[in-house]
Length: 424
Image (tube, rainbow, N blue to C red):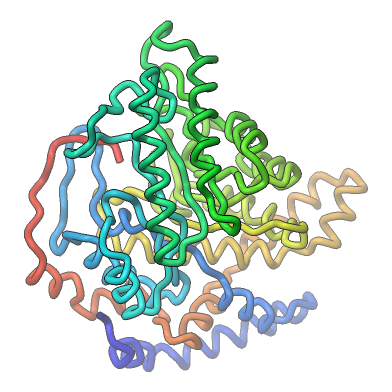
């Protein structure tokens, strides 16, 4: 753990400068009729869930290069998640992946309580074979031609729901790698029918206050065709399943140059936007740190979300989903949480009355300039003040590095050696 004393000691020499920066930004915003304290309140209330699997080093198709102090189990992961939330005060919930994170529910709850954490969406895994399973998912899971294999995958998802019920989760995210690598390998229509039939069985096992998220992915590992390959298929699935079924948008799971913010708008209109897996990408599903490649696109997504805040029934799950190959995962997750929060606050700055007027007047230049004005505003003093006032670190990365946490856990956790390639 990184104690409050360590955080306060690192904050002390930075506090006066932060107060001055906050006051200066407040004066500037006030000239435009914006109350900085209102934005501070929004920043304090912001939350994004951390993925348990993100606390370890990811991998490429060719190799994995683990660092020191890699988490050996879910309890180590929760310790790391506690550090992330303690420093950023923006990540109070953790998303678990089963069977990777399977443990006694009472022990999970006790460890989470240690760090003031709760649990977010459960994530099933039918894209890998586990040592004790009877049927392989090499040729599919929920859409497999073999009924016994489908039944095994369905049962696993139902188990995830049961585990989630005991630890306070309220949703299940389903992503499958099913598809085909060669033309003619599968009958795409019958394959999708089998998927829908399996999903309906899982849906029937949902508690009344739960939701199920359908996550699409354009490719990988099925390189020719994927069963749930885009937002249209995800929407079709959610509509067919029922009101508790929603679409989950991963920012990396789209074809190049796709307008993701428009997809967000369409799914909101359909009443089927359930949440996000935030990350960033350069070429495809790169799972890079949020905001490191296309921060303006992240802002534009949040612009749509802030604009739609008053939409009846809109209840979004915000989660990070990344793979950290060359950085300290704790640092990358903190950076991402802060960048997602930054985009949210920047989107909250948009003058929506002015924007609506420019849109009605077909003034493309001024409409675009209105968005850019919000995006270009440095809201770091608001984010840092929100962290300081809620017990977090003004500078989370510097505080983390000064704490020596990574070196300390490297002394107590088993050394993890590099493994063979594997897509994560």
